[in-house]
Image (tube, rainbow, N blue to C red; front, top):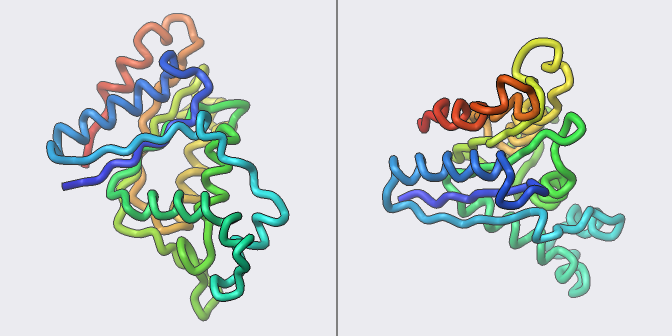
Length: 201
């Protein structure tokens, strides 16, 4: 039995293409693993706060040195980390906004990046990802074409998520794209084409 975590970071609600694509990915996962459990989290609705100087200090403070106030400050981060570690398969909805991810997804990333919990460093100084054994699918949407051609240089969604999640140990990552959603002649079939491309390992 697999536990699926579906993260949504779109501002468009039910009209969101990344959410629709994410749901299609989840459905195909559930078809392959019919007894899977599903947990969904809207990062926009959850309003995960940006990291503050105090939060940054407490997240990087050893547990034995935390005050009660510090522990309260870390509560949300602790819960998000538990949620991440409990998942076998993670589906991340990531619309391209101004060439990059939405700030709600960045806030989630900041809260789950925890030294000695989700990452560490070896004796040679190389980073060691501690979030291993996960499969990640990214449901990416964009108004233009960013998988190839001149727009590819401006895609800071797929490369960033691949690099950063890999840093945490999640190296088995596949990106599915609904792209050209604002391009005449492409937008009409963009979502259908994206859904048809979904293959679950």
